[in-house]
Length: 316
Ligand code: PMP
Image (tube, rainbow, N blue to C red; front, side, top):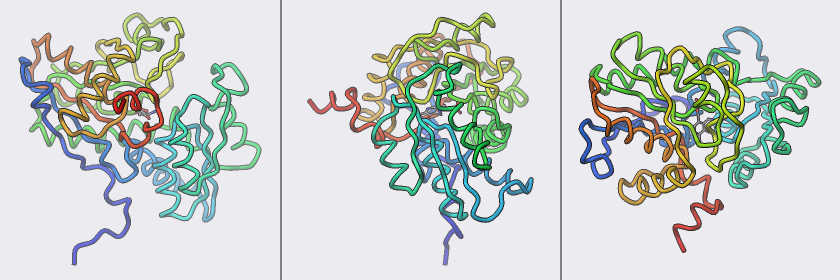
């Protein structure tokens, strides 16, 4: 017999795929890491498991405990899987702009969903402030993906280690957007330690303040954009500027057009931030002058965007 003791064992070890159709003409190959193939459909399964493992090891989670997180949805789905498999309760706090699909998915997974207005970080109604207040008031465990160092660490230990193994240690550039910053900071740190010539590039939506911050240390103006899960008006603690070499700014139109190409030309069934990452990766690859291939991540699956205007447009 060959079986896993729990679905949690199938988190990670995702395929690395070459973009042969979209990236065929470029001076260096572009590889995408298929994080949408994790059991919960996103890269966030990795950090959900890592944060709970870490808290259990530190003895701060008791049987039947309640986890609370401020999440755009994907971390919530990952935490819901882990909570189900380990016997915890889960409360997810998310801002109004996040898709109805994500809310329904979380509630169906047994999580309690609290929706907050789209409020800036300084407001008490901001989703992160609401989650923190609920943790304090009820004695719940705040998984705290924006600050918890277990987030960055798991990307060093697993995502980056897998990329190094899958490319046999040849990476010219790594590109990723930042929500919490865990992916780019963790992968970036490990790749830089292993490969001194590697370039780590932030893919940032136009309207996010992070691209300016990477380049100058000063936050850019705070605008709006529709791509979910990446970009911010303030730099999160888990985003480590010192490992990032440059930033690429990508519009919503570019992101969604690239997502459509990934789905329809490569059969990669991914969400909007994958389009942002790949649009930036293609720009970096087109400039060439790199020590090896360009690698990026496909953070989540298309299934959570079906009700979004940009995906509905494809069918019209
Ligand atoms: N894409 C999507 C769809 C996400 O939900 C997230 C996480 N918020 C990211 C990208 C960015 O990942 P990280 O938090 O590791 O920066």
